[in-house]
Length: 125
Length: 276
Image (cartoon, rainbow over the protein chains, first blue to last red):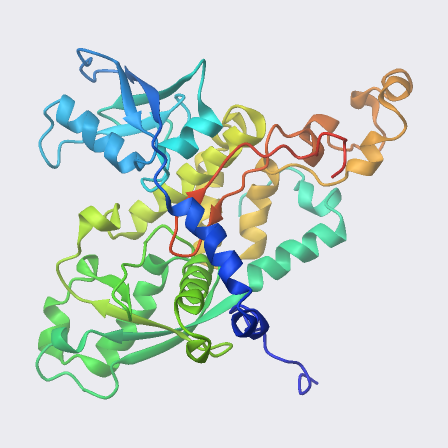
């Protein structure tokens, strides 16, 4: 029954690689590798018992991963390794740590700010 | 067994949608997982330390650890080594030494790796179709900083639920559908993934995903419908139009470029001229 079925080939079609058309695709991909030089404004808001930061508006590199934002908050609060900290966007969800600040800003910014809530206990979890 | 209120999937989801979901769900990828030879405990049965699995695309690395552990305990490690083995320290790398993320679905890991390898290599190095993805299992010292998450099924579940809420927010501008689920229902989503149980997953997922019956709810034109067919009196009991796939704010989409960044932006369900 499945005798004549060709298995799926998930690599790029060999014709591309053979004729050099792949170069065009590679060049296009390369444009996405350049770091986004922009900065976005992040507004930090404490939730529950979490201490308030001295300044709550910061410019953060758009190319940073959200993980860098989490580490930034931990430094600001002088949190030790292992101290619990939970971070959310728009009081709604915890983004993946490898989401970039640029992606989150494009999708979830409010009035030109990306709002990051932080809490010492799990909320909206 | 708990009784669930009328499962929308049973009544209002078109067969084509269910088929598409089923095909997506049933997709699998071949994996070849080998314990790092430098880390094999003394007295291990060498030559057998490779495990082959055809794993669901929608599953995650932490979810195949129990099966992998059973195999290694039964066949490869001796009793003394088995006793001190801690699977919470396990982590995975590709053959080329790139870290495999715990919160990426296996299908994504497979595709991203295969495509990246094929554009990096010369044409002669193109991977064979259906060749298993070769994975190295490390037994100790997980680089938690780079994995970004604790290597555990629980952390993976939390990340998964976070993604479900993010998608909810993109579609509707809030996470009410996800937070409105009872605890048992939320757990059911993850159990469905974990057990690879389509019905268990979609019994809950259909409550948070848009309905896919746009044509019926869009005709007759809304002005007529408002007067002749108030939603509450709809004899079909059709889900209100506001839950329709064409009425979401954005479609949750993410593009993973080979060896490159992940792109995400607001993606409206319709083009400006109203085309799907």
